[in-house]
Image (cartoon, rainbow, N blue to C red; front, side, top):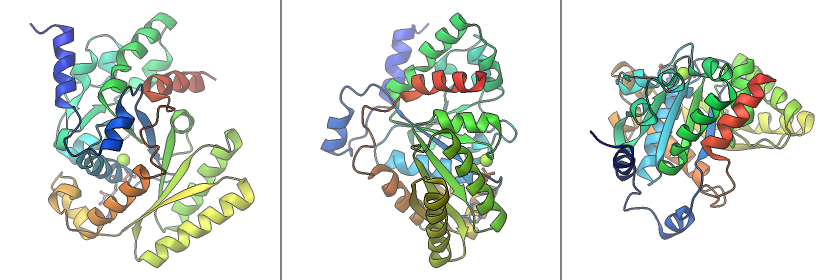
Length: 303
Ligand SMILES: Nc1ncnc2c1ncn2[C@@H]1O[C@H](COP(=O)(O)OP(=O)(O)O)[C@@H](O)[C@H]1O
Ligand SMILES: [Mg+2]
């Protein structure tokens, strides 16, 4: 029987920093207390959130960051489907004390770990204080073994998704050029602006027909948000509509691995640069981590 400490060492070894991390990244990482939590969301469904989450995760992992994905789309949990991996347990098993954090972490490709949310979030809200404290202290291990936690949510505008947005360090908002997708994205930005105008929202256009179409949408969305909502958005670029993405989905493989030279894969790299190069503060110590995130989340969902 492996004891808890031995399991911990194993997980940490599995996730240990890659050789190719730059000196600066390593220096930033020393004494790191928490992982950065990024919620990936959209106003409308089917815009490509899950594909973007999974492929960004792989790209970030190749850059040397340790990445964990939390699949929090309860209606259509599908991170596992895109990996072609069936997780044994979900977050609910951990919340209800049947399984520990090591058992609910599944191995994805390229050193990525992922957790299937299941119906865990509803259960979180119902916990007694001491049970919640115990859960928080267990899940806090993720702060030690990862640099970035990507949370894939369902389409926005529900209270639960809003809570995920407001609790995260950073939000990646995905839209397509479809008018309904853009108006729903704007509605979501408006809801965020009513709660916190300083929230960091990064915007990505997916399934664009051309770079100019994407840039046009990014410019307009940024302009109207600033003008009417006093919200400053940060554009992280776009992905073209790419048949290879559809092919890869059918194969249940991330396009970044199956078709590394396709448009979408090359553009994911650009998006990745925008995410991590934002003034070198990607691994800063000011992030609240998964521990802070869960506490905020439960507070938000209880109010
Ligand atoms: N860049 C793209 N080019 C072409 N098709 C895409 C692209 N991104 C996503 N898709 C298609 O859209 C579908 C929905 O994507 P998905 O990531 O599941 O969206 P969401 O998580 O927002 O519901 C995918 O199955 C895929 O067929
Ligand atoms: Mg999805």
